[in-house]
Image (tube, rainbow, N blue to C red; front, side, top):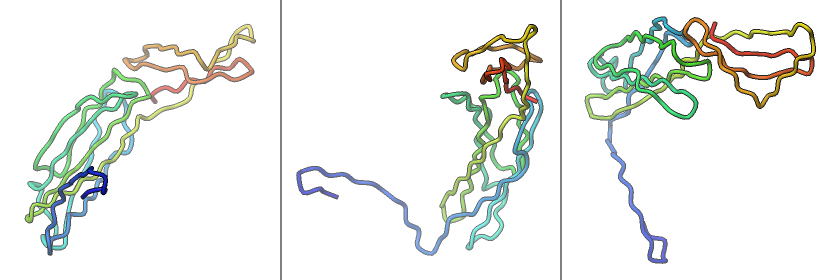
Length: 165
């Protein structure tokens, strides 16, 4: 492709006439608790191959924390994975689980699901009343191996903190 001003670009795209990409289904856990195992299941099918065997599947699991990712495991040839959730990240983390399936014609499809931590809200009140927090503050407390992040304050002086359940 050229833009008429001397600039050009190219791109490649695989075209497989008569072969459709696999359709992927992912099920199982939608949340996790730090330190516990969560299970995710998956399968794939396509018009040409029908139900695809587990050998056509590959998993990639990442722990996403703020703006970076940690590899959490790769698995091949299985329709179910058990992931040991870490207990050293706060509620601002989540897992991304990607399942890819490759059909007999060589086409690969991918699907990603997000597994979020179970959280709860903790309300703190000061004695005497009137202690004020600031939404600009960021306090961390280790509790049961998890880090809790200060989330917000209210005009009443009540601090609201999101913590793993």
